[in-house]
Image (tube, rainbow, N blue to C red; front, top):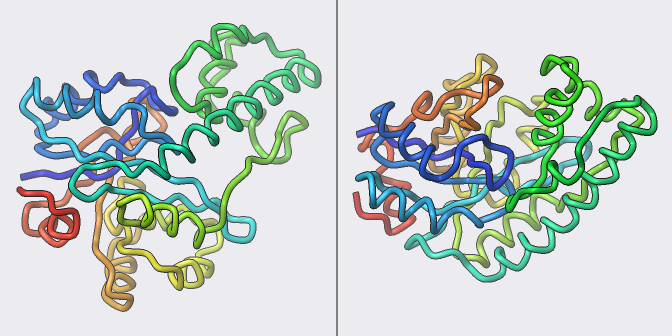
Length: 269
């Protein structure tokens, strides 16, 4: 059995629809996966239905954006009993509106400061949360840029950049737990200052992503930290359906490894 607990659809900055993600998972011999779109649960019900249609089991989740000092910290939320708490639904609605306005302002800045071409109506034609990943793909399309060339326009040293509004790690974990979820420290290997990982782990996490599909990941290091802090050990491919992220099924747990998380979620294997 192969279980992948970190994946995205076009309800945030992924490429696949929920059904396309399910079909890709099936093709890659994934048995169970979690849908964890950024700061939204809009696609989870659809994904569960598509899983039932194609014979896969889906765990409802989301990936909450938080911050520690100058670091961006992502926290995978998996919902107990596959029930999404109302508080996180309300939070996601408010966050979506803030992200939309930020994205509009940044796109206007790209026009103003860099004379980039954009199609704002097309860019906004989405049901999901707008992220910098969405911006990158749009300006690549309309300006014939590579991903690396496009990415420079959304980085903090760009004139177009506007800081995002993020909550603290402790507030994010509190929100998750009030919303029937468990909190997993996502891809700690991507924290720029690795010394901050030890400080971040002082917060009340339930788990940590020890297996992650990225060359920077040090599974042995994060397994050791999980044991030290008595944390559940998770795994995720962080699939977005694009070339800059791994494919679904690239980082999985087996049935035995998944059992402690399944018990915490009341998810029957």
